[in-house]
Length: 261
Ligand SMILES: NS(=O)(=O)c1ccc2oc(=S)[nH]c2c1
Ligand SMILES: [Zn+2]
Image (tube, rainbow, N blue to C red; front, side, top):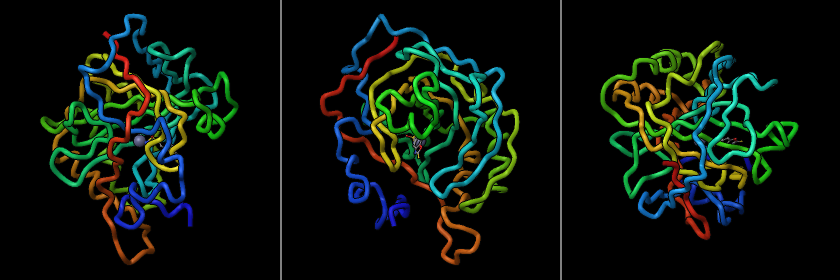
């Protein structure tokens, strides 16, 4: 069935095009970012994140990642500025990670990948009525991507990793209130930006990507807790750990990557 996609040999990124032909489209994500080939655009503004009154609702395991959902019924948590024409509302954030070592990010930078990548997903509530409608529109979504590299322990990530045991199984969810993702940002907001897509099915070409240049540092121990999550449900007897849930870079085709200062 169409919703059985995953990251395994039989249902992974190399066969997604069978159910989702746009996988071979002209603005697919992720991409390899080559800093020297990115064009510095002085007209690009700074990224503005107004997350102060953000309201996270819950944390859940959808079998592909662990997702923190937000109340997006008003403009309390928005991203604006940068390449954006209007504010985009925060809907959810989730992660992609590897099995071990330094693979796991989706975007790569001059051939190097990071251990993990955090995606903060926002939608254009000025032009569209629902997330679903925006997710299918060329300027519908903006995803802020943050690289995670391993090193010292991240002082705030434990708030997430301490709850992962409660969402071990696919389909599980638990309350996760008043978490402000601002605590997961690096110290500078320099970025690359380009037009791309969702990196998981349905792979809609609806994302204005904003990829931060500066990674955040998390410990191997913290990252290890993500790998204890299961891609399978409690009732399934064949347990599969959730890891290597990343798509590899796609052809840049006729796109340019712009760089902020
Ligand atoms: N990995 S990602 O491109 O940020 C992304 C963001 C939102 C999504 O909603 C569906 S459905 N699939 C998605 C993938
Ligand atoms: Zn993602």
